[in-house]
Image 1 (tube, one colour):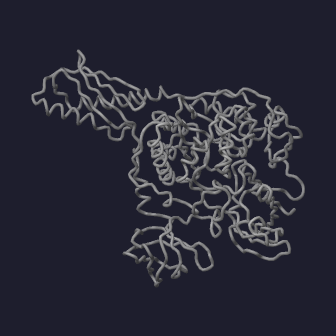
Image 2 (cartoon, one colour; image 1 turned 180 degrees about the horizontal axis):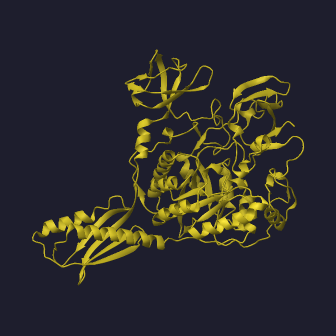
Image 3 (cartoon, helix red, strand yellow; image 1 turned 45 degrees about the horizontal axis):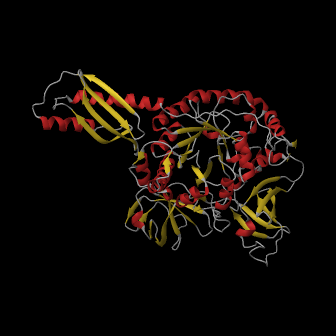
Length: 612
C-alpha cells in the first residue's frame, strides 16, 4: 500500500511478471511492486503461477520491502467461488500483499485481511465510481487508461484512495471490462482471461450501402502507451502508482522498461524532497535502458491530453521496434540504409512493403551502411527500415543481474572476546554480529587496517552496497581474511532475514457496506456471473441486475465494445471537426463477421455492435 505521511508522497513503480523469474528481474531492475497471476482466475490465462513460485517471488521481494500483488481479476462462476476463496486464503498465508480483483462477489466472501485493489476491469472512469469503490473497502484503484489529466484530477479531488494508472505498454481499444467481442465471436471471454484479440485483426471499412472505404487494415489496433516523459504531470494530477502493462512479455522487455521508468522516477524523487520511493535500494543497470529497443507498435500518449490523431497502428499489430532510417539502395544480397552503422550482426529488421504489409529480414553481416541478408523480401529504395530485435542489446539484457543494492554503513569494533561488526542500512535498520577471536596486534598496522577495509568492502552479488566503513579498534589487529569474509557473509544473511521480519505488511479487512451504487439498474455490462456478485449489487441498492454476457447473451444485435477510439475521427469524418462530413453509418468486416459502428458524438465514444 502507498501512503502520504507527514506531507511525503510515496511513489510506486508497478511492473508485470508472467512468472516468478520475471518478477524477480523486475524487482532487481527497480520495481517497487510487481503483479503476477495465480494458478487460476487471472486475466492472462497463459500467465498462471503456482503458490510455490509466488512464494519464491515474495521471499525475494521482502528484503527490498517490495510488494507482490496477485491478480484474481476474472469474473467467477458459481462453481468456482469456493475454490477462489480457498486460493485467496492460501495467497494471504504465503504473504501476498494485495489482490487485484474485478468480480464484486469476492467482497462477499469470508476473506482474510488482505488488501483488495480494484482492477481496471471494473471500469473506473468517474469520481463517483472510484468513490464508491473506496467506500466499499478497496485500498487502491486502477484507473481507466482512457482518462485525461483533467479527469484524473477530478477523481483525485473527490477521493482519498491511492490511484494507479498505466504508463506503458499495450492498449485495449475498448474500455477495460466492457469488451465482449471475443466472447461473442468464439466464446473466449476477455473478462475470463481468454481474449482472442479480435481488435488486432485486419478489417474492411464499409459504408451502409456497401462502398469500401478501407481494405484489410487494422482499424481497431492501437499503438502502445508511453508516458515516461509525463510522470510529473501524473504525480501532479494525483497518481501515486505507475503501472507497466505486460504480463505476457519476456524477461528482457520487463528488465528494460522497468529500468527506464525507475530512472525517470528516481530523477523526480531526487529533485523533490516531498517524494519518496516505496521500496529500498538503488538500481545501477549494466545497460542503457531504452523502451524503443523492446517490443512496441509505436508509441502514443493516448488520451492523456485529450483526443488526437496518431493513436492507432493501422498497418500491423506486430512490433516494429525502433526506426533506423531510409533504405538508400537495394542489391541482390545486401542493401544500403541510413544510419546503418547503428546495426549489428544478427539484428532483426522489418519494413512495410509497397502493399503496406510488414515484412521481416535478418541482418547476417553489417559493414558500415551495407547490410547483408539472405533475401531482400520485397525491400525497395525509400522504404523506412525498423529494428525489432537488437542482438547486442538483448545480450546485454540477458547478462544484467544483481544490479539493485541497498546502501549500508559498517562499523567494526572490539569486544572483550573479539570483534563486533554492525550494519546499518538506508532505512535505519541495524544488525550486529559478534565473533570470538584471539586478538593479535598487527605487525604492520597500516597494512592490517587496509586489509580489513578491503575485505569488508567486498559484498559481491549480495543485496548490499557499502557507503561507509568505520574501524574503531583500540589498536590495529591482525584479522585473517577468512574471519572477515565469514563475518561479512553471516552478517549479510542475518540482516536479510531481519529485513524480512521488519517488512511492514499491510492488512485490510473488508467490512460490509450498503452505500448506494452510482447507478441503480444494471444490464450485462455490470458483469455479474455469480450469486455473490448479484448479492453485492443488490446490497448497494441496484435493481433488475442482469446476467453477465458470459451467462446470457441478449437476443439480436449486441453491443460488444465501447471505445474512445473513433474511426470517424481517425478518417477525417468527424462532424465536430469537419462540418462537411456525411456522418453516415459504417460497418467493419473481417471475413464473415460484420459489425455496425454507432457514434455517440455527445460522449465522444464509438460503440461496436454485431449485425445479428
